[in-house]
Image (tube, rainbow, N blue to C red; front, side, top):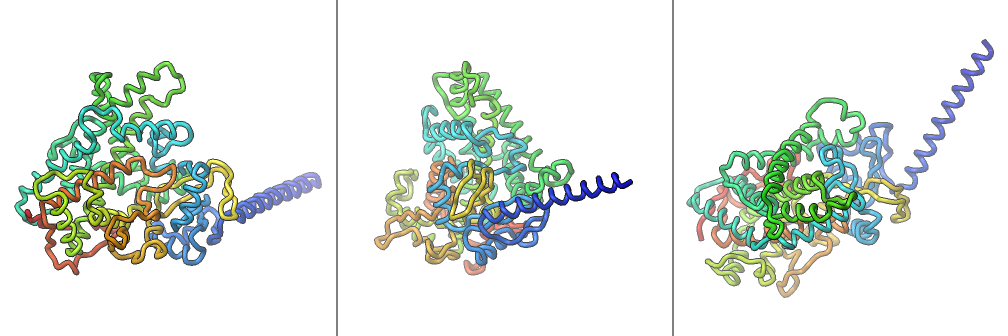
Length: 494
C-alpha cells in the first residue's frame, strides 16, 4: 500500500510539473508577442472579439493596444496589423518573412494547398508568376483583355438601355457582366445572361462569399480541429465550392479535347500548353489539381469584388450628385458621347480615377481579411513571431487612418488629387493587399472598374428614387443582417 501511495504521489508531482512547464512555456511565448487582451483557456479572446462585429472589436483593441496587437482566435494567437505603417514594415520591409498564407480551413479543405491563394512555398511562387504573365496578355490569342472587357461592357449597355429609365436593381446585371469578363479570360467565351448554368454560377459565387464571411465559418476556422467532426452550417461553403469546381472540371475537360497548341485563346489553354511542356518533370506544378484550384481562385475573386465595387460606386454617386456631374463633365471632355472608353483615357481623367479609388477605399469587404503567416522566426517591432505565427492585416483600418486620409470616414475623391487636380497616388491605398501576397488580379480589376464606370456614366445619368440625403450607405459588405447593395436606380439615357 505504501508503494502504491508513493507511486500516486510521484504521478501527481510529474503531472503538476508538466502542467507548470506547459504554463511557463505558454507565458514565455505570449510575452514575446505584441501586447493584447489576456486570453482564456480554449476560448481565447472571444469575450473581447465579437464574431458578429469583428471590425468594431478590433477598433476598440487598436485604441487600447495600438496598431499592432495580439488576439487569440480560439486557442491560437493572431498578430493583427491595423495601420499602413505596420503593414508596410511587415509586408514590404520584411516581405519574404511574411509571405506565407495563414490557414483558412473553410477554403483550404477544398483546395488542399493547390492553386495560388491558399498555396505556400515554391508552388505559390511558380503558379503566381505564371498567372501574372498570362493576365498581362501573354499568349492569349488575338483579343486583348481590354477588348474582352469592352465587348462585355457593350452587352451591358445594350441591356441597360432596354430599361428606358425605369427603376431597376442593378445587382444581377453587374454581377453577370463582370463574371462574363473572367469567363472570357478563363474559358474563352461568355454566357448569355439568361443561361441557366451561368445563373447557377453567379448564385454559387455569391453564396460562397457570404458563407466564408459568416460568423459560423469564422468560428469554425478557429476551432477546426474539433468542428470538422461535427455537422452544421460551417460546412456549407465546402459543398458550394465543390459544386463550382465540378463546373470548372467540366470546362477543363472540354478544353483538353480541342485546344490548339499553336493558338491559345484563354487561360486554360495557356496552362495546358505549359503542362504539356513539363510532362517530363516529375516535380512540375503544372498539373490538373493546380489548374482547377487556380481557375477557382480567379473566377471567385474576379466575380465578387469587382461587381460589389461597381454596385457601391453607383450608390455613392447617387448620394453625391455633384461628384457624378464632375465625372460626366470629364467623360464629355476626354471621351465624348460615342467613342468606346479605353484604358488609355485613364491618364487624361484624373478626377474619374480618383473617384474610383475613393470608392474602393471606403468599402469593407471583410472584417477579418485573409491571413498571412511568417515562414521563419521573425523579429518585428521588438517582438518575436515564431515560424507559423498567423498575421492578420486589417486593410480597411489603414484606409481610415487620418494620418493618410484627411477625411477618413467621408467620400472625398480629393484624397487622390493633388493641388493642380492631377491624380495623386497614395501608398496607404491597399485595397488589393500589399507585398508579395498582393492580389494578382489587381491590374485586371482596375481596368474593369475604369472601363465599366466610364461606359455606364457615358451612357446614363444615375437617378435615385429618394432624395440623395436619404440614401443609406452601409460600407461593411457582409455584416450580418445587412444587404447594402439592394437598391433601385433609374438609368436615364444621356
